[in-house]
Image (cartoon, rainbow, N blue to C red; front, side, top):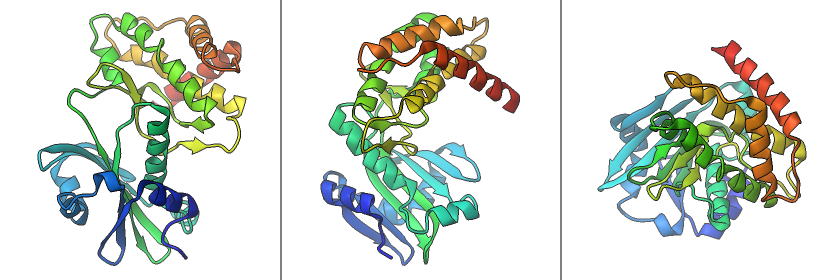
Length: 281
């Protein structure tokens, strides 16, 4: 088989990415604008760099860390082979890190802030994908939106300001046939300029035609449900009324979209999702 699938090959060509082999099993692709001799040692010693960084997540399937390399802060992530289903799914498909890279390029074209993908890679044993690697940039003062709201002096006002901007970003994605796929509050961040951005692009799908309405409603459901849920993390926080919040978000979305989702459908989905999350705790 070819080392990369068709979509990844197209991304490599469009970004002029340099292919960096790191041993017999591992290879990285680095977009031309980020390729430098200083970066290559980090890629060759990715595992050591990951272990030495500030660990943000360390689970069976994903390990992520912040690493300072040459005076620059970078975000490193390794995703592991989960099970036999994962093995079969990725026999002829590039690692999800490359999906993130393609998505980041699409976001850049649309003008939606997202951390730049500096390198994407994978490790294979024959056809079997063992793990994927991702290196993205970061910036001083960047902060997850959930933390921004929780630590705010006025969480309700902070939430309201955020929800004036987030639906417009979502509508811009959907108008251009892009679905994030997991657009909860935790996958928004506030950049150093104070504006919201979107990260964690592993689940992004780019449709040939328009995004189905059912997927739009699911995307809005995740956002609203996570906004309701975050108030449980605030001492004395009062959970917002689901119907009112959902109607507000859907109306704001409709101001930037040719299609207007049913806020009643979304509100029903929100209640179902919140109940599901409560049972998982």
